[in-house]
Image 1 (cartoon, helix red, strand yellow):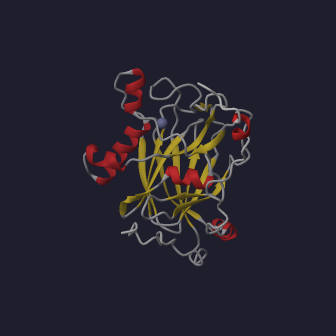
Image 2: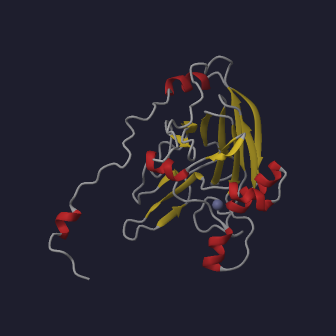
Image 3: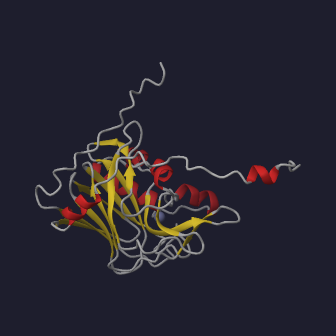
Length: 280
Ligand SMILES: [Zn+2]
């Protein structure tokens, strides 16, 4: 392979941000902050270790994913409650907000909807930032652990990867066979997971999550939501996943209702205004 003479000059070109977010609608963080001071817990769902559970959140409510008992990572799927075709779009959320998301950033829905479905309103791990390895928490890069990749790399049949947990939970919730539920399962928000890319090879890495019991990630539901959360078989993801080797703990989902009227100003976000004619 010949390196061109101007290789250094080509490499020295400065990058530009693909999607400057200056024109994104700005979330009313002061409004969320006021509303969350009035909220009371109305429901909770305990997600067993190496398993997943579904939950629903009405638009205008808050929900928290809470660490209980031990350091544990959670894989989160979200859908529009009454239309499973509209679901969390991890890749576009990553393109807009970066590899990891925290307070003030949003989870966006799939095409052709592309609207915010949930806004992060509090993150007790917000202090973590980026560590010396380039790692950070709550990633939108890691897809979800799944039995297909596990089989490809290690062989065998493991049934408690997040992908299978989410599939079973959704099938139970909808009352349909797993084969019908599986196509709805999508790339996740990796809640509490500490990840990054190695600087030399660019490989996806994970390390022990800094989450401790009592920590939580809190969201505002912009639309009516159906959620599914898996307590990853990797536990704190310090060593391995897709096996029963790691210590694994439950996760708690809490649903909170703000006082009536406290979020009146926040209208439900509209679906994308693109006309969908695609040049025809
Ligand atoms: Zn997992």
